[in-house]
Amino acid sequence: MQALSRFIYFKLLGWKMTGTFPSHLEKFVIIVVPHTSWWDFLLGLLVRKVLNEEINFIGKKSLFDSPFGWFFRWTGGAPIDRSKSNDTVSAIVKIFESRERFRLALSPEGTRKKVEKWKTGFYHIAKQAQVPIVLVAFDYGNKEVKFSEPQIPTQNQAADLEKYSSFFRGVQGKVIR
Image (tube, rainbow, N blue to C red; front, side, top):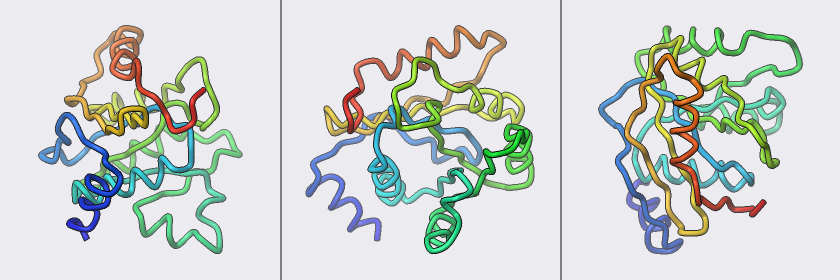
């Protein structure tokens, strides 16, 4: 399956990868930016197969209902109930604590719509779980998926978020906004 995925990604679609996926790490948070289309999910699944790596994600609870819930679980997803005032950060930290390997991919934008400011849950999850953050850009303009080195959150959230956002400057999503 990896050979087929590599053929599709590199040869048929003409995409490239820059940077290195941190295969040596068992636990980390992956933030993928920009998130402008449902195609990002399919691209993420393809990239995961190209890398032959286990990468998890969370999604709104309704995605995990019939008839497609089995698919999202099978692909590494976990449902999150966003309709209540749940402590999502603590719940995800518990998942990190309970598993030998957990690599959580999510979008700090929290939606496919244009946002002025990222949600910071990913940052608090990484700090509380004491895991690094890996930045991943889906650049449709250059047909490139770009990986950063693992980032260790510091005590200066504003400086960290500025550093992270600078990694994504100039990156073009599938839907231009």
